[in-house]
Image (cartoon, rainbow, N blue to C red; front, side, top):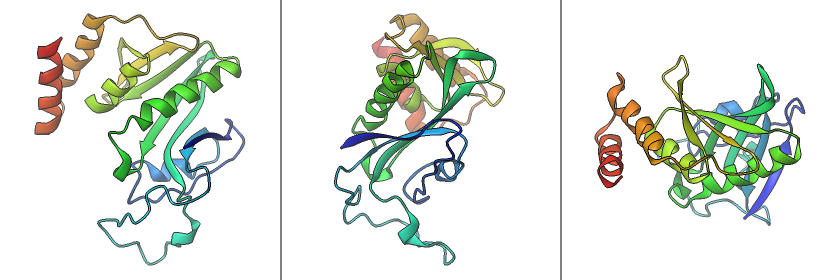
Length: 197
């Protein structure tokens, strides 16, 4: 798999991801945010033989999809802090989830953002799985939440955030204690991590 910077913020680069395989696929069609991907090195399909659960809408041209993409991330400068970049969306092909591809892509993207001159990177997450994956990539819970019930995480670009187990657990408790509709799998995921420390 190869890392590729598709475009920096403002470059109008777009990705056409199959909405049946990628969460947030429509967000990558927008040209303003920067984008980076993990893709097959030879342009072959990301998941040969993968069959989606639903048919393609009649008006959609399947040949327009970037089918060599395994994972994608979008990012843009923080409007209130020129030294900070915000990761907006991270998505991994549904058939490739659980392989550590999201954290690998985030790590490579943070390296690139460091070379672009940013000091810090922030992201807001809305589920405990993304929260745990970003913790593995050196992000830490800031204690802040966005207006849309997402927890904010941050890290410096040149090192991982301080590993603070209690801060990590505080974020997990925030997911559990807020008025969220957690499904049983999310509840079990959080409980296991809080019990294990």
